[in-house]
Image (cartoon, rainbow, N blue to C red; front, side, top):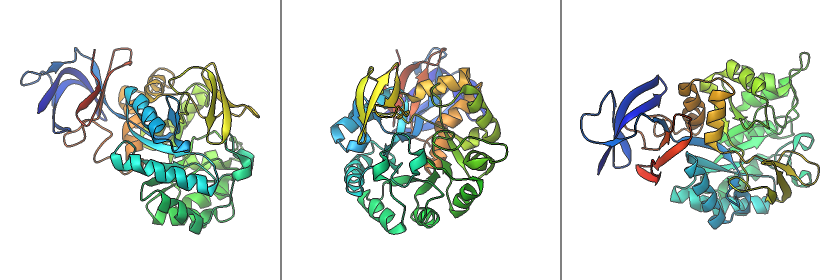
Length: 378
């Protein structure tokens, strides 16, 4: 079967142009400018962007990835797909080692089904002083041997682990992760500038939700933020929900790193897509009020209720990104982080037909995954 999407405004890394594309067997086969050479589905001038790629997501629609409940996890994937996220990594939070192994083993099944692009351990190797919504009683010092146990439970599907660079054993564990093809991220860290640089030199290449759960910038003690922003080897995650980071600080980070080193994430938790109320994030109780998730005990921000389409719109409207740059930080750059940029992340012949149709106001009008409509354009 062949499908042509015509009368579209295609958003590519090179910019926006009026054109068309053809899909066969789940892949884009042709991309053209102007009018389509034959009949096709007219999109009436709406934007078409590549499917969003979320490398840090804890759940949604009542499902929480840390529980390992596969039915609820499928609900979460479905919710985020309807909001344009066609590729997603499931993030776990600090738990007992047995609990983490169990959740990873369970979620590996969804990776094998193609519903998830991998698993992310956001804990337990993080700093007590910066643990945020993680249970401080379950934090541990990292060791390569224990990490190997977690990777084994994930059956080859663990894609990222967050480590506080200043912890004893952190540098050796970062090196061990990278040697196994796992992305090492620095986050939930109380490291100073030099300790962060040491983590990067050991192989860390991602900043877990920059600004959040780390010391603030200081002109005499620059801390991890300056180190992570300044190093060309590091891609920074940003949560653009209007709660986690002020738009001015988002602009500051983006102006330093540019679209090639910035990845939008949701950090979404189980309340995403639902209303206010009481939820859980791993073993921690969370209350959502006004769409903002905080721990019941202590009040720390506990993930978000964000979806990637909202983060995308905010990046254009609040941060001032061009559409092409917003597409890069929501799709292509996170795809590169995962090593999947040859298959997803941009509109190009040969890549998967993972696409999002957007209205003039950048609302989602349709979502396609592998050439099949999840929601058809209205």
